Amino acid sequence: MHEFLSRPRFWRDHRWAPDHMSDYLDGDLASSGRERMERHVGECRDCRTVLRELRLMIDRLGRLASPEGGGAVRIAAAVRVRLREPPRS
Image (cartoon, rainbow, N blue to C red; front, side, top):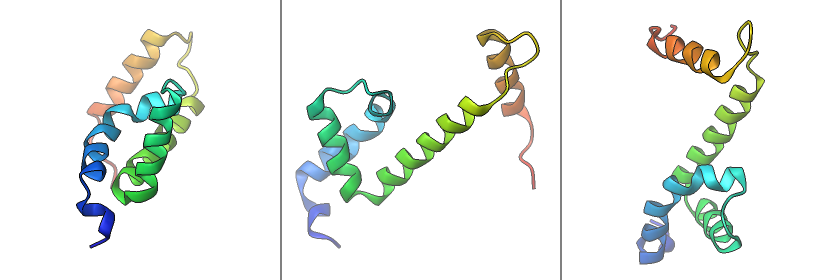
């Protein structure tokens, strides 16, 4: 077990990080929050993985073609339909 895993700061940041990842990716954290996130994901493989997967999901969502006629309501409806589909094997 790494030394940093037993430190109280690590565990405080580990609880804090997931709720602030979207703000971090959107550039909405103050510099102290950005530094805190970057330090923590540098130490925490689990949070680093979650952040990487969130970036990937945002990137993929950004590449989706909008449904005929566009609009946020139609896109949201299309996503809801896809979420109800059974997983592909």
